[in-house]
Image 1 (cartoon, rainbow, N blue to C red):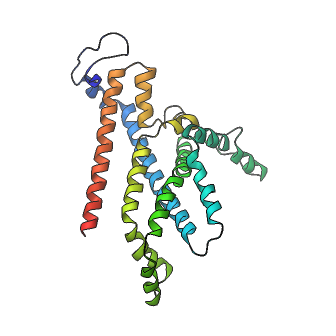
Image 2 (cartoon, rainbow, N blue to C red; image 1 turned 90 degrees about the horizontal axis):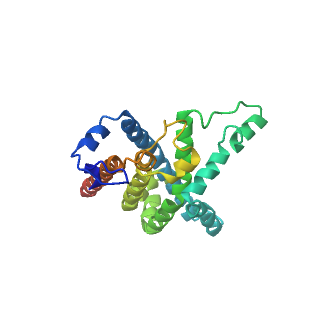
Image 3 (spheres, one colour; image 1 turned 180 degrees about the vertical axis):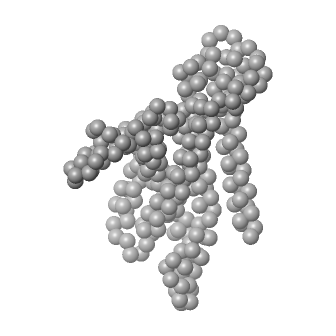
Length: 257
């Protein structure tokens, strides 16, 4: 296993024990990447969940018109590669050439530093990821919502329950398994996000928005520290496994209740 060696991609791989892990857990850049990744996930996953469920609810509503066309339109982001998504949002939120700043200036406002402000830059990444991830999750929710028996809602209406009460007490419990899958997959995808953020802001400004996988890529392929990057990859795998197990445990506990 390369994580226990000093392999650089050239020559022999000498055994160094846990030196790579010791160095990793004393590296401030590593902790910064981890914290930024979790902050990104905490913002992106709930937003993606809410958007996908809201759109799916609208598309299965008996009052909605043009559902077939709307599904195609909302699914288009999933067909676009993450790199293209990053380029599109970089063009929209560029500071000197971006569409959003152009519109703000046209209406007399001051341009916003979308790329040079670390927090604003991360927010743009969150919105881009949610735009891209909503499409597939929307399809999962549409299938789940269609499987909820209509009789439940009819009985609730007879009892005088309003739309929000029906959604809270019937819809959400009925689609709980799908919600679990959506949250789990969205969390894993957020933790290992790479291509889109590279195309959008390259982890900038500077290295302030370097996420976990970008940290691994930089140390492994740009600095040639393959053994060290392998150690970071093992840590990433462990984190993903823990997240999956915790969510599975929480879902099982909730199902038992």
